[in-house]
Length: 476
Image (tube, rainbow, N blue to C red):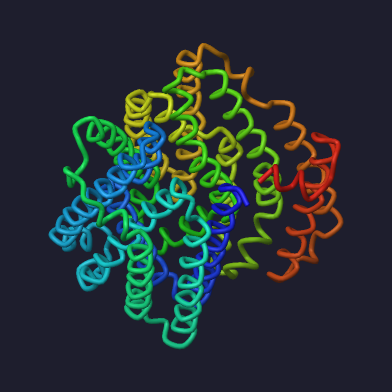
């Protein structure tokens, strides 16, 4: 089984479990408590990503730069210890600023539960490093099984707590305990690397430059990615943030597909770039976009057409106003077939990515501010989606110059647009036939599975002239 399939399975299990918990929380917590809980996860996630400084990605990058086993093992240990140090610094800063966060977000849970949130931060961040480490050391099967089993038990207990107590503190305690268990299991599995006698305990100067560059990008990207949520939390109410969070709900398979493709691509692209094999880079990137188009576009179109049925069935009538927000956010995922971040780092354009992200972040703050003032929550969704496309256009120009190519030489526009129009047509027919009948969560899930299966079969037949398990595996 290849790496993409293992990553897809692990990400699928993790995100589906997270989605189930998200739905239960939204349905059974009050709108205010749901918003407060999501704000906690938002800020903890941001701190974790910022203070990991892009180290998980850097492991994949530097692994592809050497063929010597001793050097590879030394990289694993040094990057692990460096990330622990950086995240510990992040935890100290988080605890110092917890009172300030409680004030600006109108959420006293930041101050009350700061210690528990610190444990969640360090363990969650480390899992991302272990995933990339498992990829380059061919231990993805162990990673998938161990993390998925623990997460399953954690989600089951969290759902039970939600149903019977609706107590946020108990939910955080359960998350912290099981995250710690996953952390310990993964440390034990990789202990031979961390006990390796290396002359240097932390990353060297060359690695530091890459990590600082990618970490700076991560800092700005995280702020840019969450600026809508941050500004709605500060400018509007916790209840408004709840509606934004529901509207920004991401169907798990979208992140699964893009994340899995990216994780596998980075070390290979890094090697191609080092050897100046630009044609191989273009071919690999084009193949990833073909796969993403076939797998992603039908999901996005289904969500746009059946947005009202999805939101009401999953989250309840109290989130009716989130439907239009959900549609606005879904439009940006039609661009997600073109994967940028890790690709630019792999081909040496991390500095250009950083400059682009700073520009988009500044524009994002300005546009979000005025559109939120004018239109409320939907203004944040419009600003975010528009700048997602604008930023992509700027990045394409930089990549074209570096690879001495043009966008349509590697973008699979025929596959993309056939998938787009075919999805619209089939969804339109299904909507006309079933409008008014999709009144519960089970029917909408069954329809989604039926539609997606039909789309995959049709696309395999149209693009590859063959519908088989072998072709499906190649697609994954």
